[in-house]
Length: 256
Image (cartoon, rainbow, N blue to C red; front, side, top):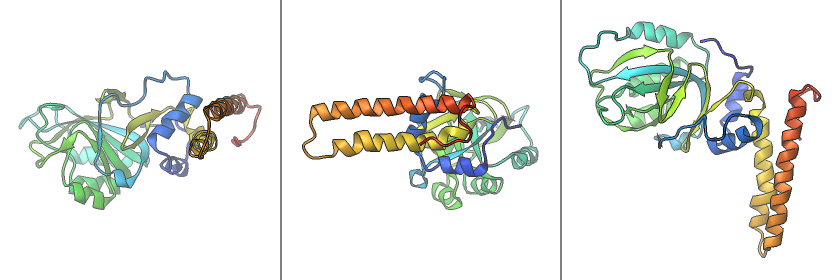
């Protein structure tokens, strides 16, 4: 997996200070992508919401636990060598081929959570199940999944480093993903370097023009409308500055 992202590990870590809806808001400012795409369309469950958001590169896996004998199962040692070779931080995105109604086993538990943490993975998104919930939390390995289960059953890796579809969204290997208890969203390469600063500015605009004024005792409808106009103007100004940065007219990334 070769990365097309010009973003540092530290920049990715800073994105975890924002919740995923804030990332989605900022994507609306930064990206030309359709606003109905790039995020999960089906409900997810975050089993470790107290761990906050996670952000990392997608490493993709297809998994099945219902079949005792599978002709093309992957050797786990080969899988581990591949996983360990990829750049961190990583999010393991697993498409369970038994999902949604035939889930009988989980790839995840205490052992695989600790293994993958050692490989530089920060968590998983799987449309299947997880188990050993408290032990995975103790390992510091976050999980968004469909449900809990008790057994591994006949769990096997069927394929990896391939496109997968989870919760209504196709994920390709190497895509940058942001996820929390709301769900998850993919981040395009051209957006990633600007996303933290734009998210900071978007949050500040909301705070100054919407949240703080609306909590002021006695605020009138006219004042709410005036603040909304000011908010929209500020976001438009932010868009203009972004275009200036992208066109090379503004050297350095300082949107203030």
